[in-house]
Image (cartoon, rainbow, N blue to C red; front, side, top):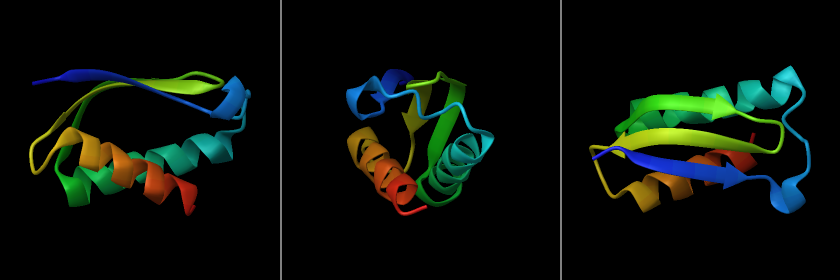
Length: 75
């Protein structure tokens, strides 16, 4: 079942104005698609948050989102 998710930067800081930060998010989403069974139906990067419509096929969505945040924080 597709789920709408919003993930925000701490204190809504406008961090996602640089292309290299968006590239990190791209890498993280692609990691979760390939390794975690995430299906991304739609997404948009805003300056301080991202919106996703996703489905997790290989596990629970909260675990996939946890891994997405973990992978993103290490890049």
